[in-house]
Length: 496
Image (cartoon, rainbow, N blue to C red; front, side, top):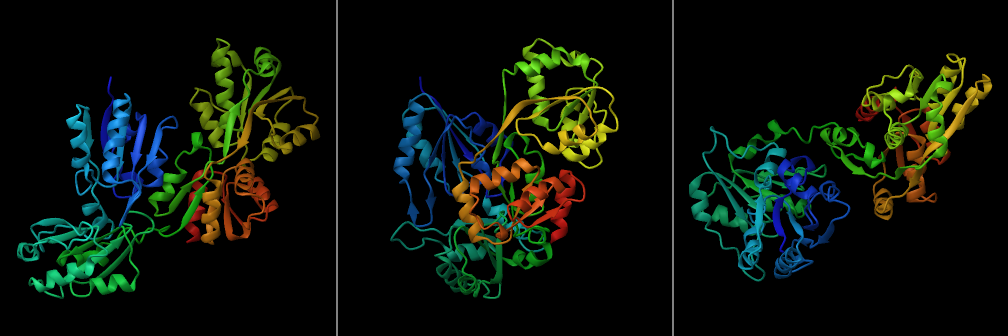
């Protein structure tokens, strides 16, 4: 039984421009065949069990020839696999999507095409250029600026100029001198506004304004490289007025987010929305210790405790998995009081229909312990990480509070892209790295290597305990005003 192939347009670069239908197809893929221009954030959405095949096409160089790409799609579908062909922009707009479907159709392979947001419209928009405007133009024309190897451009420049419309040239950096010369020779006013946008819709976007006569020279002077899109027409004169992307507060800044993948939350997308180049680098993984007889025994004897204390959302999830395995639910907790180290952990309790009775004003282990010491008369049950902070138990010991400290999950430090990140941090001084716990600091240091020059980065820490851990490794830090993601985002925004 044959599989099927879905051509999916990944959009022009901004991961937020991947369509919902494209995401759904990607999530169901068993094989993903992808190009160079697909954003890393979108590649990160490929299912872990899926086979990922890089066919890496780029200007003047094809890692895998087009004929071989066609055969790969056919072969994988004939193996009965659900194949996604992930392409930058839209597969049918100069994306060779039609060529890739021909061999499938000849061999009776079912296929679909999921359109993508085309760079021809999105990139000018991110550069402040509306491709149509009633005061300037009534038509839009999209042209490939790329010629087959060894052949000259085959463009009817006179016909294009006669349209008096906006002209958008894709893949034409090397051909730009010929394009500008062809347009002006065909009668385009040399002073017609023009622009070229490099790496459009990404935090590395650059726009260069010029005219039809000077755009090629301006692009060369600014060392513009592929991928880039050239636009000709009066609408280019609106670019400075309508430029919204370049004015985002974190445009051009790189921020590494170290939160575990399962708790990535909103930090990364919020930073991207402010223009940052976000590198998601989950370097810790929480693994439940299951089965855990000590935890089961404690839960069975929960009436003997006054407080049940959680120091992370991972602890909450582990306890609930255990209760379910025991055939129980939240009612098994009886009248025990619940303490959470911070709002994130308290929110995890709320998703289970429980409200924390105590959350310290400062969200760290020391303040949690000190607060409990002043509230409790009875015994405390700590269900937390295998190497939990000693500050919590020190506070309880100091107040002579009886407690059981049970490890219910362990933290592992790993990321397969550690070498890639290390090289990037060495090349880009001043990168921000977010730390939401002391564990993320340890995971980051463990994976990039303790010999790294940590003074090249700045750690943005959720609280003082996390900052203290970062300082131990020589990482310069700034600390959020409050130990929340909202406060971390505001701290980063305020830095620039």
